[in-house]
Amino acid sequence: MTRKWEERSKLIMLEQLQSVGAKISPKDVKLLMQGPSERDIVYSGLEDTMATAVGETLATMRKHSVQPRIGAFLNALKKIEATYKDAGLTLG
Image (tube, rainbow, N blue to C red):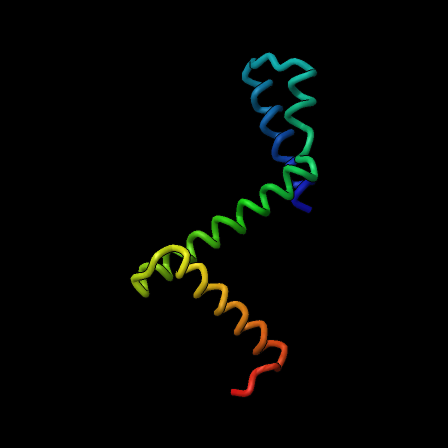
């Protein structure tokens, strides 16, 4: 779904550029129209995951006035706790 939307929006952008007289070579059109590779998609997902983790770690550091390693450790423990609760493995 996202890929088709992206292709359509790129096509509209190219049509608009060409309508105002921009000269775009067929090679450049092909480059603009090709979608992301699997590697690009994976790296994008990893970047989002890491950015979220850094944000969570910074928030935990500030909240508890601790060093980055301790903040990351606290977040990891919270996630383990949530997983155990979701699986019904806690006593409380």
